[in-house]
Image 1 (cartoon, rainbow, N blue to C red):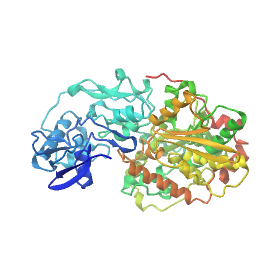
Image 2 (image 1 turned 135 degrees about the horizontal axis):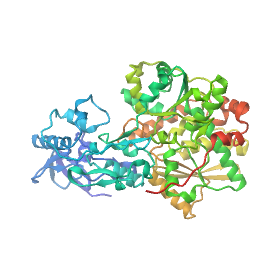
Image 3 (image 1 turned 45 degrees about the horizontal axis):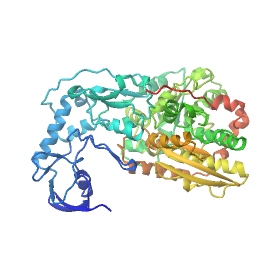
Image 4 (image 1 turned 45 degrees about the vertical axis):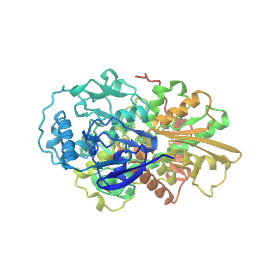
Length: 581
């Protein structure tokens, strides 16, 4: 147990464990100290320790210099003052110096939720720049379909570097140059599309200045909606419904499924569908593949393949293991394939006259949609991908009062879904959904209780065993690519006894995706979104994918049997080795 130390903050006594920073101690007293570079990822035991921005400085008695509260530990008898005129002026000066080397177009625009630097400047009443910095002008990196990097906006907080290197273990980002010319970039300043970046977007999720942002596809979607020759359909991923409300002032975890359907219909989409339908379809194929591998001695463990960032990670880092991921396409891509074949045939629409829009919690989905192997009927399965934030912006642009929208249902044919599908949005959800179906298929028995609580939780790596008849199914789960690496190292070393492993690139799964409303590492927000996911599951009449009547009809009318020839052609894919850079 840690030794306790006593101190005084703003005249009030406090006792905290040794090693506690002034910033963390102040938080326990509801004292607000502004920060920019600070990032405490409690669930990963990782703290961004650079203390570079100096926005959190405070006065400490008997120390002549102002001290950064995020990196200064409480010591016995310390006397701290957080809001003196000197401390406030020190913070203002730090902000002004950061702004002196920052593009000033940010300061002349409306408040940008993506830029904490601008927000802090506004809160502190900084309207003019007193200092003039000298720096090089860097070109934006727009090489990828997912991310845009603008080194000119980088303030060297190193949050993205911490996330990329310590949490995700991708090693793409590091400090480049020194002084005014420094920024966080790639090795040899290569464009992102020439690196082994997974496009998970976790760097973007923690960037405080929009130096890293998603590739914006809003204009392409508006143009599609304005084109009278196009039949435009949209699909919404399960993680959207528990997060987009945050963009409109709602509490994290507020369920807005019905409002989403109503808002998209109001915006003019010809078909409004739920990606949950395709999640149920994914389970039909994935559970069939797992059962087939177990019964026929196929390669195990089978790894889930719904997450495109995770797929890119294994392609670059573990090419010798590419025979074990499931060959199933992701739900996003399965939906596009079925929309441009089965749905198009039902509606008597030529695939080339259809546009499929996805709303995803993930920026990697933008790059996934461009993979050349993901093509059906001669067309890309998905044409454009919006993030949760982009869709929220479109609602605001359209003047749609989201909080006042009525609840509506998704359209028929590709709109019905089960509870198993909605839990895809949370870590452990995909493998739980697959287990619900695999259990009934293997045993031939109806599940009395579909919940598999042992597969749920927020631990970065967890394992569980599920008894299915005479078989004990050993399951592994990881979220965050650093955790995935640990499981993959065990598989490579022959230490794994798992039959199936679910991997999600983002902390918490899709609910913590890089395209979601910014949470800056706040695990409580992630947990509230997860709770909402399971609430929707619990409220569904049908909670196992193979019981979805529209899925049953799809196989009866079009696909034939699960894991069959036609299903393989439309719903499965291949992987390829990528260079590690």
